[in-house]
Image 1 (cartoon, rainbow, N blue to C red):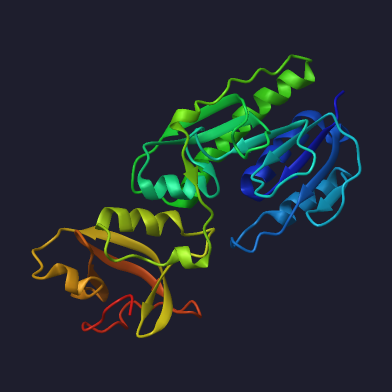
Image 2: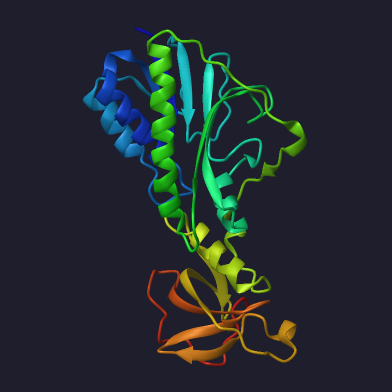
Length: 294
């Protein structure tokens, strides 16, 4: 039987490895490479490590040099360059050629895309531009939290992964189709500064942003009296006519049962989950004369 190598990160990587081991056992795994991810609250490194211990699989951390031989390798949830990409199949969180690059699922949700999905492709010199082996998508409706979207996409990952593994195990040739470069778009990496709320956008987009960068990520943030706070959930509120609106973005216009209703570039949002730097809820503790973002 072929020997497979895995570069895994996060829930999707963990679930695919777990399904592989259920079907084929640990002897078919040459090695696993994984890493801790400081950018999320739960990175599944411990779960992946646990599977490797259970099935006596050699586990490397990202910083370690890998010398073992293998027939085919998979990068699932992985976001770093892999030196040997000659026999590598990459799983990507978008419907390529759209959203090549980093944080595609988060950026798709912020943009309000109607379909999300996964693409399996052969690795290439330019990232996410190789020939497409398989692609699956699902329609979503808003509002949707990033954790829900990850669960939906994870199911597609497993489906595509098991289909490809089945072909390889039974000696079937994997064929790829070239991407249409004329419609390619790129999704850029996000860091801590990208979690800041822009009160100048419309309320619909603002809610999508809050939902897209929530758990397992750090969460949307804004300044309150000069200190950073995190907003985990907002609700849309029927808009009213605000005189000189651009001068009042981020200001509280109403209070609703202790929850501030805030002026956006278009529309209003009610902040229903907000915490300080120590994780303490601020609902019921915010004064009426408050401007967020300052």
